[in-house]
Length: 224
Image: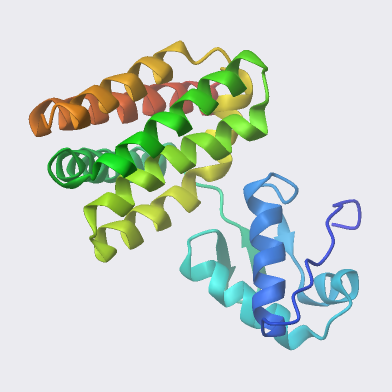
């Protein structure tokens, strides 16, 4: 625990528990805190320079996001998802991705479609430059624009929660599979479907997109 290197991300506009929550969540998602790692309240409080109360509250918030497991009489640890957990999340995410893309094919405005095309162009440029962090961010931006076009807050909320749970696995995936030609083809297919207002095709391509992620993530976790 002492060797884990991360610092508190200060924000004068947020309650201290939220600052601690954001700091710990970022450390989990980026792999600074690894699955199975014990999270001792007193050590975290000392490391972050805060009292134990905001740490305790932050750990409870992380439990709600399924990033931390609170074990009675043992304390907290970073949740290590099983293969079944990952499959279950990706199955639901695949259904949501298909639904969101299908709705976007019907509702996305021209200016939003152009923005989506711009993001895709930046995404492909980041791949050429092998800029992994930029690839990950632009991939999220691409899907966020599709979600926003659905104008469905509930769909977006559920999708985002699932994405957070899988972020560390997807990050590991993209760091290994930096050519990701299949993802480029999927994005282009989704763009074509939206431009042609073809909801059925959009749903099909989006489902294949998540299936590709599923196969690669599972292969990566099995080879650990």
